Length: 291
Image (cartoon, rainbow, N blue to C red; front, side):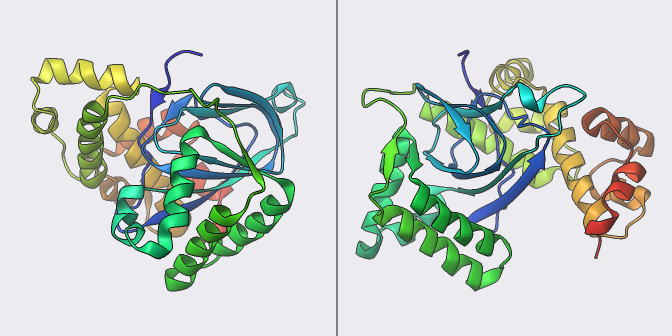
């Protein structure tokens, strides 16, 4: 496959991990990698799974753990496409940064989890029995919050680290070439954009973070993310707008300002370009999710 994309997950800055649930006609994320470790529970759909140098068919339900910066993608089969397709691709996944758990992982009691994270560098597929058990735990954790969710998360890691019901996906000699210094620089830039998307962002300020000239930085960013800085920024803003449309009763003008758009016309244009619908239509389709 072609070189994987580096993707910046919009990881909550205040959390040690995040649990996400998705359901759509087919998976849309391209062949990619990211510094976060990912625990992927497939709940519906079928197709082909690519992890490192591993290529296998998948069917729901399966549980896979992908280590930091390991390239991966789930591609759905033909039954998910076309006007007559009615199959859904569904998944629940946990994303976590090992660096966010560094202090906790130093303790002797966490040695099995440290070993699990190391093994995940080759990609791990778990057996049916442990998948069923962990799947139920992930679903329960998704519905929890606060300390209860944190305890469930640690219990999930404990169960995954102790089971022998698993196999590796990548071959023993597989090594993905990653420039750690380059990734660290890009990660700093993306963190800045995610933290400041509500404000006016000057490209010169972002280029300074990367210690590059404006022209060199814009080329560098596009080569690594396949997007311009403005495209990336608009996607962050529209993602936040979708959240506010579902979870709040703010009017569209207020949501536009909350998301960093100071021109309502531009907000409408970017929302439709990225989501394929208008803010009001998006809210109507998701009325059941409001309160």
